[in-house]
Length: 356
Ligand SMILES: Cc1ncc(C[n+]2csc(CCOP(=O)(O)OP(=O)(O)O)c2C)c(N)n1
Image: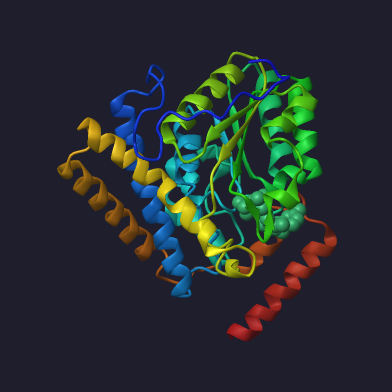
């Protein structure tokens, strides 16, 4: 694909589950079935995390309900040695990458650390400052190339983040140095209360790549099959040394931005209702049921596995975290400054006094 144009939006399975076109590029039935299993897990994780917020177990949860196909596909197309750079909305993608969901969630209950080892899991900490993860992702990709490794980096962001300077700087650097990065923009139509129409006047978000020489691809973000094909090709292209791709996934944030948000103040219920039938789980289930690949026995198996995962999350998030306040001073400098040492000693003395 040339970097001067954005092709029409890619869709392989429509909202009724029917195959679009001749189906020649459709992933194998086993891959789609496994994708559906992962979607069921991702949806259940979103539901469980939202319930934990209501129980006071999590401080906040930005749900990816409705965006699970993006979450699952972003993780599924990566090799073990590749990297994922997620945002706060990408808990399900990190879990789909194989990180224990309990570890992924501890940051959102207020622990100071990201909950998992980024080097061991090859998942960067979830970035809350918008788009700051993108230059980091490009740096990791660039470093891998310099070392002669074939690592690919999947960098996630939202539509709002494409207005940030970091987004543009990351695209430019990645294009100039042919960094092996796939930028996946989950265009869920809102940046909290700011709708897409007030975010960008560009023809599409994928078109933003054109000015940098980065090919832009638009894909139906609720179609797991299309996402798998588009992202697999972008990953393969990056691995071949042909540089970055900007993928815009057309999707929708069904729930509130977070539990701290009231979406009724800025969008009509009708709009949400219009998106409900486009749910990524419904359409893949319809497709796999029609082809006969998804039997009621398999459906029950997937649901049982999702319940088991949810029970594991409830058990893991049930207790209070035991945190050492002294860790506040760790991991900032390899040799702490005299001021930090002094403050650490002061805190230790005060804590001793309180505890004695
Ligand atoms: C640099 C920066 N500015 C502002 C914010 C506050 N903020 C948090 S989420 C958000 C909206 C982001 O929207 P989008 O990028 O579309 O992602 P979504 O939340 O929809 O997944 C904003 C403005 C922030 N986290 N970082």
